[in-house]
Structures are given as structure tokens and as C-alpha cells.
Length: 262
Image 1 (cartoon, rainbow, N blue to C red):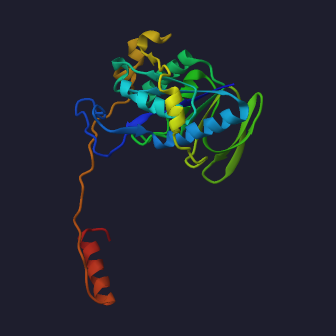
Image 2: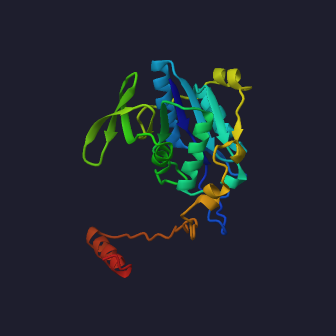
Image 3: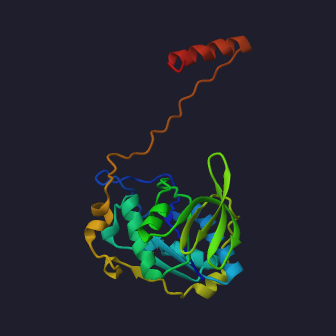
């Protein structure tokens, strides 16, 4: 069995500048980390790997510096990894991103199970995983909270729906997006770091893909565009009210009325 986990490098700080022309984040020179939700996906894949003796591959889309999260996944137990990186992929919305990653998955192999985190902390759309599955024409299940059974031809999972918990059995190949806290992510191993420090990490560009049409990638392949994006203006204004309970109640009521909140 082969398992593939999609991971992403995200800004490690909220102090990120925005390109006013394209509306995308300026990632160059910004401290980065692995997307926290992807840690749960990676741990889930590692648990399945241990139970089935599968091969675990990871893939990420981003600049060459994304190599850091691939190396981190090696330190946790992943076997292989690849980066999807090309300037022609820059500025992609969720649809173009999903299509690009699906092309990368076709390049790296044909895994039985693809596992993604619920969402990323820099986008929060929670759309990329399901859209990858649609482009690969495979079934998918989102909001997975438990792995109940791993069978030869299918996997049984528990799904957190708005009002119920459901049990789903899905045949391979399939894609799962997992919820936070499905498992406690393990820490990277220094021993594995030494063992994998020379492991090759290929970089896939547009020329490596079956579909080489530039109009399907990056800004060209994005049907949605960000009109404006900006960091929120910090507001540190505060009022301190003092007095008896009756005075505080009256002052607070008057303040809320002045702000037109009531």
C-alpha cells in the first residue's frame, strides 16, 4: 500500500505583507512552519503506515524553501517527498492549487490513500483536499475524526457531521481530510534527521506534468481573484469604569448606547 500526505509550509507569524497588485502573501524572507493541521494528517498517515507496513510519501506546493517541511516529515517517519515549485504556479486560487497538486500526485505515483489536513492557517478555505479528489476522480471523505478499520480494499472512518457522527466505508483509492486532534502528532526524531539528511527531494515543475498548458495554472488558471486583502488595523483603545455595581451598570449601558450597539 502507498499513502500520500499533502503538506504545506505556512507563515510562522501574523506579520506578513500583502502584494497590493496580486493580493497574495509575500512569503519571501518570512519565518515559516508546517501547517498545524497537516501535522494531524501526517500523524494519521504514520499510524496507518505502522499498521499496514505501507510506504508514506509527502508532497507540497510552494517555493524551494518548502524543502524544510519535507525534511521535517522525514524526521517524523515519511519515506519519500517531493516539491511542486514553478513561478508559473504563483498566485493560484484554490481551484488552480488543487489542480496543480493533483498533477503532482499523478507524477509521484498512485497512492491508495491520500490524507490532507482539514485546512491551512493561511487560507482557511478547507476546499483544496476535496477538489484534489475531484480532479483525480476518486471518492473522498472530509471531517474524519477516527480511523476505525483498515481493510484490504477499503477504509472505515468516523466522520463529524454538524449534528451527528457517521461511519463511512470508502474504497481505495480515496482521499481523506482529517480533523484536528484525530491523533496527537509526534515530535521529529533527531535520529531520523541524521538518517535522512541526504535523502533526495525532487522538484516538479510545469515541464514535468502531463498537462503543460500554462492557462491551467497560477493566476491564469484561477477563476477567482482577490480584489483586496489587508491586515486588520489593531485597536488597543479601552475604557476603565469604576464605581458601585449600579454605577457600573449605568455607565456600561450608556457606553453601549453611545457605540450604537444597543
